[in-house]
Length: 92
Image (tube, rainbow, N blue to C red; front, side, top):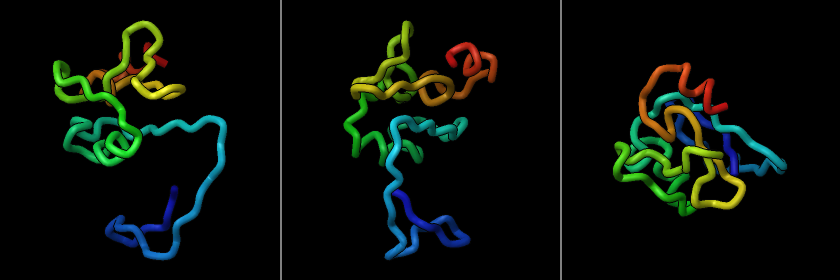
């Protein structure tokens, strides 16, 4: 679900809409640990496993970056925490 936001990036009531897609990328850069940052709401809604051993980031394996949610992958900072951009590039 999407919505319009005001100048403070707060949702504007009544502006919700859905974009249907086969594939979506969320490129947010480093936004803090998934357990407390802006990713936390999405993680809670989708029941994404959080890796408590890695600074509470989204849990995904190191081979193909699959998460606990079917067809959902995590790479870069959301998976490994704040890091060099070269790691995110390597992970695709």
